[in-house]
Length: 249
Image (cartoon, rainbow, N blue to C red; front, top):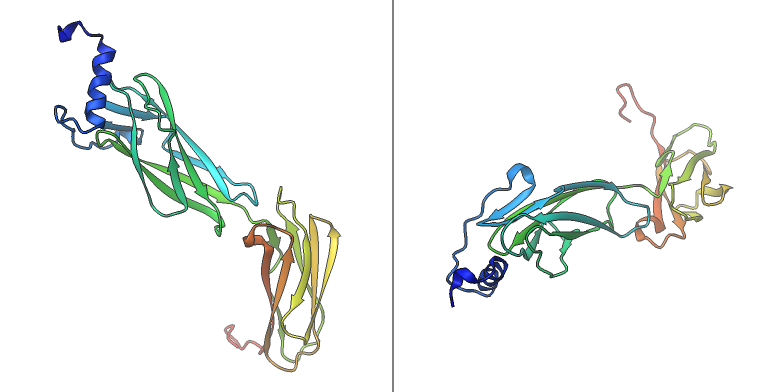
């Protein structure tokens, strides 16, 4: 049979199969750096990504954020993902396992785990394609606070009048939780939870019995959140020595 008479697509597919399953007739090209951070190339295998970095904000209470990185195969052979490397267990890659034909598009799904994280967090995911091409994908996810406090610590000075102080608690947008109770680990402090508007605004009033001695009280704020990050929070109440000049006690 004349090889030149075979369809070009059939030849391309045969070459790709030999490469995937260890054929020695095709040598693997050395890794090359992504061009402008958008392409991964090895020989004639190329993946061009729409974007290599995604910035987004997670909804409160969401444990996993799915990030979709789409790419186009601009090479001559079907394109397959060989594996992933990750900076930590907070971000993992998924691929559907179906090779992407030349000119077609595929996608990588990155699973960003938000458990235990707050604020803006950046992570990276390495994608290695068959034939040694690789690229690094990036994600920047902002994880909002579900509870927003007007203060985390209240202060009284030894000898001052033991007046009540308060902390206001606002529930973050779309958090949909309630503050259930507040308790103090020190019986010389009293605390009261006031519901201003259910699932939106609360106030905690703390009052020391006296200010005769220096001491620290830890208050536990309990909510009905199923997310362990928001089920239990801590506030502090301090009776402390007067501060001398310069701000030191």
